[in-house]
Image (cartoon, rainbow, N blue to C red; front, side, top):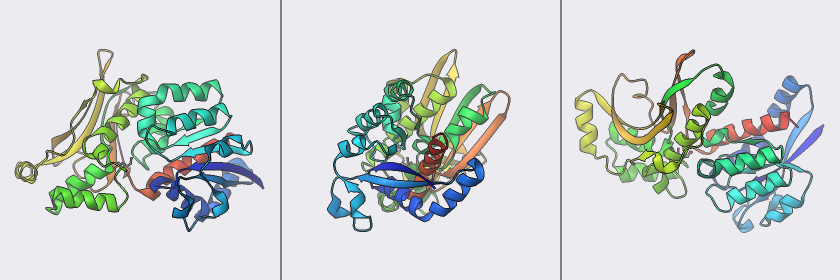
Length: 325
Ligand code: HSE
């Protein structure tokens, strides 16, 4: 049995999900690996970077470290899974990992939207994989689909619901007459919201994700300042009710399209017809609606936030990296 050692950075919502899935699904992953690649491989977490070891009682203490250098210096660690989130120190950690010849898997939309160029450059320069399927639309394998399955298409435009927290809040306000505040607290309790939920409700999180999608669909990294962004904080119960009376629903939509060679993208609450394909995507679900020149219209839907769904996408990237080792 080949043992592939990895390090996990962070043991929060995403990191703990990855840890749990790797523990629980070890046999399944080995079996799938064998069926696909005819190799006996096990993926083993060798180190977990955390801030405060005293906080984690259900994890083998010998795995925990507060010293990133220890991970960098361990040549037997082949892959770093970054689940810290945010800019600092995550971006620096990922670049340093690739410089030390470790592949990187990340769910960090902020880091990728803002620092995608240097991160991809580091991956190419060091000939390391850098995969981040979990950063956009949770479980929906949308990045891989755009990169691989739709390679014979120009994507002409796309729209979607790509923030679970805000979709959860608007759905609760629409269907259960919940208050904005109660719905937000519930979304936090369920592990959908960011550490700073301001990033969800003011639209930044969706903005990062539409920038990443645009980069893959249209080939250029976006200047984030060019994306029109309006959050959901000013959506009132009355607006929701009025829209419903007119056969509409308010959804928090991200859009992007290429017009005369320029990418026009936005993130904003919008009224859509109740028969629109995105109108019934409720709760923390995400959906991405693509318009392609050859394939036509495609709609993808799946859990967009939460520990296990996001970790499921991370582990799938991890599996893909390990396949190439
Ligand atoms: N806070 C994010 C959301 C988590 O609600 O969509 C997943 O990226």
